[in-house]
Image 1 (cartoon, rainbow, N blue to C red):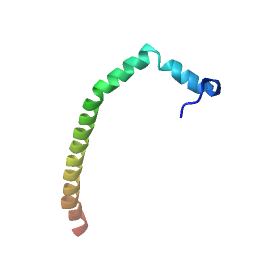
Image 2 (image 1 turned 90 degrees about the horizontal axis):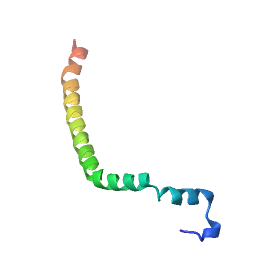
Image 3 (image 1 turned 90 degrees about the vertical axis):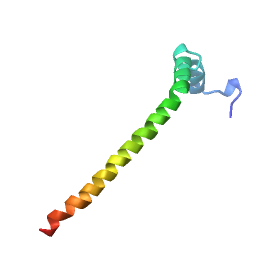
Image 4 (image 1 turned 45 degrees about the vertical axis):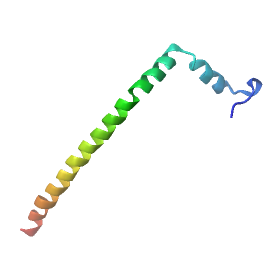
Amino acid sequence: MKHSPEFRSKREEERAALKNTAGYKLWSVMFTLLYPFIAIFTFLFSGIIMFFSGISKVLAYLFGGSHARH
């Protein structure tokens, strides 16, 4: 909820001023353009980690139990 200007806090005024900077605008554009790539990379990397984690669990199950039997 936006307040009328006479009731704005100092932090709200600082935040509004920062949104007018070139750096903020550049960051907003870059984040918007790169977000799909970040999301796809995260999804693929998570899948790779899950795959190797599954292999590790299977190998630990197969070879980890052999020490307890001897």
